[in-house]
Length: 322
Image 1 (cartoon, rainbow, N blue to C red):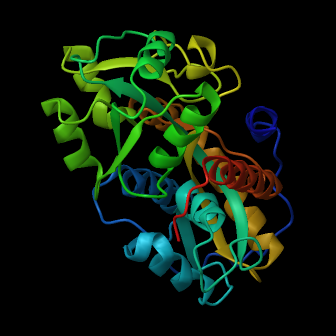
Image 2 (tube, rainbow, N blue to C red):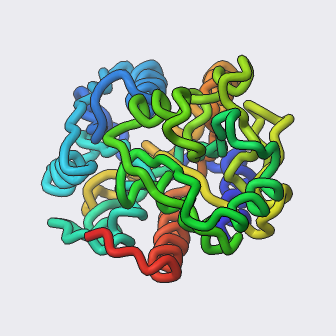
């Protein structure tokens, strides 16, 4: 279902037409809340989107970084904002699908308290190993792990993170037993992976691809259903040994639920146009991301499909995360 939705998004984006909308919007600056600190990949892409909106309308899009509580602080800030199009949320799939699927008690409902505007990018993850692990493919990893149940560890950026649940999905589908070692962020996890204290992990391409190309780590597969344009030489997990495996992280733009549809439509049309800009698309691919703009309805369906997938993964792995 996810693959079909993504295909529809990309195909439909070029055909989107601008609906009738308020001629006065925007008449002042727009605040875009990012629920991560400045400087990370989420912040980087949000600023690219904000810059394109600023260029198109001549009104400043101000990035407001509000990290905290795994994204809850930033999301709640937008949910409680006036639904006038002047407060937007730049959110990750972790906050929009994973956290709700985990069962965390939230002060909002992501499906009813927010209005989807557009998916922005999907981010295939790369499965990387320390070179001391004597395997060079997913099939070899599965065989090796089956011979050493509970003896191989993997890192994530925290319990319930997409990296954690993505590996749990692979464990379940491949029938292997790996030990989870959670970290409080990407940097310490990658540091220990480079040092050999950790054997493997899924991580974003910008964080680890330079190490795979220098030989300090071994990249054996990407997590998405199709190969990544940033590393087309690396097979997918699905084609390398776990048929049907498909997991990505992603970013989307939202507004408070009662935001007028004509304003949502104007935002959507301009975000789609910005992401179709050749220079923007090329820069995103260099960062390991893939532009995936589409309609608000498509983002809503994609978000629900992601939520359903993670609910199944959590149930199959019998994870207790709340």
